[in-house]
Image (cartoon, rainbow, N blue to C red; front, side, top):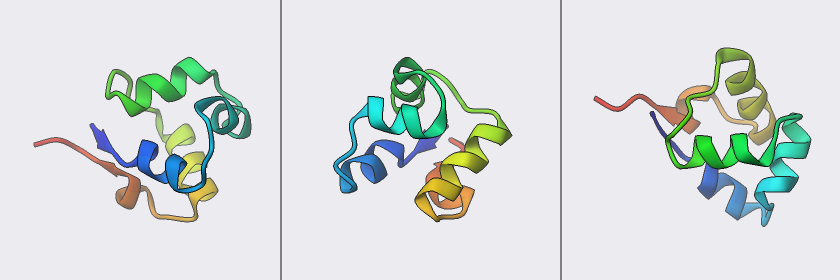
Length: 64
């Protein structure tokens, strides 16, 4: 699944570790999401969307 997580994080000048701490996940989880190796479940996707104050669809886009 394509996502804009790395872009959104960079806009706020946050490290992967900073974002991970705010979402209560590991830095490795953030890295895996950003590189497309892991698709977050709905609870985590909703937490990400709330943190960035955007709808889930603005952050995550399923590849066709």
